[in-house]
Amino acid sequence: MRIKEIIVVEGRDDTAAIKKSVDAVTIETHGYGITERTWSLLDKAYEETGIIVFTDPDHAGRQIRRRLMERFPKAKEAFLDRSDAEKDGDIGIENASPDSIRAALQRACCSVETETGAQRFTMEDMISAGLVGQADSAARRQAVGKSLGIGYGNGRSFLQKLNKFGVTADELRRAIGEIR
Image 1: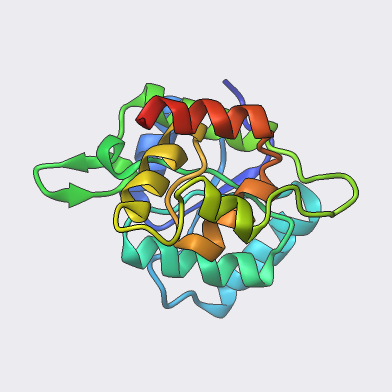
Image 2: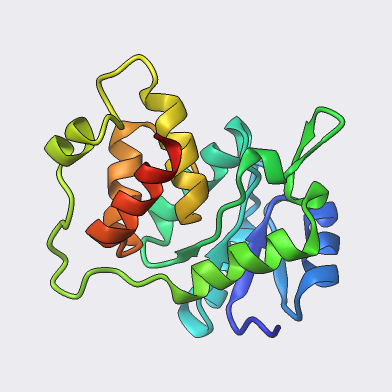
């Protein structure tokens, strides 16, 4: 599988896992302290080929992803579920199987934003689906995010992901039905 966009990862172990899984070029952020040189590389990649942000499914990875997406709002995003990226208590892309990495990247390459830019889902939809406002809402978002391949997020960020990735009402209903 060849990926035309540049994949943005956190470190060299992530790059090694990507290279074992797909034919792609990566740029490493080396954690949260992204250097000016790396920002320049990211700017160039974003403008010329596009980028896919693929960070670890942990707190640091979410913070790095947030920072990258603020600067590159039209970047594609790939997500791994925490359970697919954990080995002996360590969480990271480097622990994922090649199949899991390929599946996450395939979902990122096929994701589309709504053409009108209008939101398909609202916070009321999230509440009625039990994805916010209930004691088990975080666990439900985790399961639905894994099923849809969009990763985990708090209520607001999960709503944004549903809309950004063009999830349909049928897809959401199916994913929710799998956890009931």
